[in-house]
Figure 1: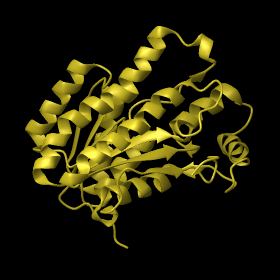
Figure 2 (figure 1 turned 60 degrees about the vertical axis):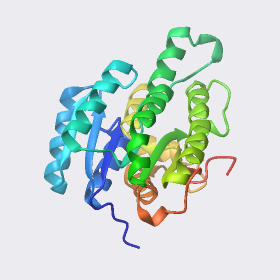
Figure 3 (figure 1 turned 120 degrees about the vertical axis):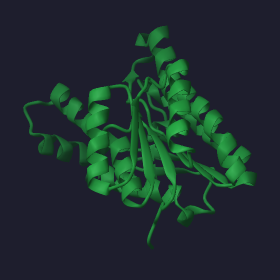
Figure 4 (figure 1 turned 90 degrees about the horizontal axis):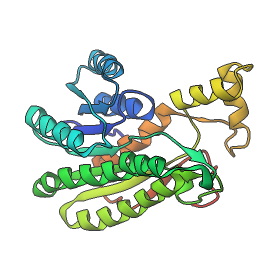
Length: 260
């Protein structure tokens, strides 16, 4: 099956590195023009230049704190001015934050909800009218497997992402009559820059490869996933090959989740 995104324009938040960058690369390789958004302008520009050189596609980039409503709305207005529309929206901003419940402050709760949930709400609100008018759209919410099976010391991320799961289902119902498909990706243990940061903090005595192998042992498939594997699934959901898939939450976790 040849999964293509020719002629589509995709907006990916958190697109300068990790899963966001991998999805942007795969989308561009599949024929889409892409817009990537992240907070660090220097990292973002390097990623933009790399994607454009590798794929030959148009790559738009703007530094933005998606947790800040004014910045997010200004970014979206600039994107529409420069690119014309958004066909595919990937809400990917935010890293994993997990701590014992009593230790999480009000400020940390608010920040997590702003970045992970309200950014998705606001971007969907901005992108949906055009998608509905054109009768074609895709929204992918990047969540994690803790959304379905939250564990102790999983605050605030598991709670924020669980709200994103409900948002996905609501948006899927609203978008379906207009051929706007909305799905979620439930992220398991994937090799990204977040893993490298954890390695340096937790077990710097090991090599990164040794640390990744150790982390992968409890997973049924016996290894961690790659960002490329993750991007392949996102590209499928964004394409016409997945034209009858909406309102789903797909685990990409090597079988780690205790629930389907």
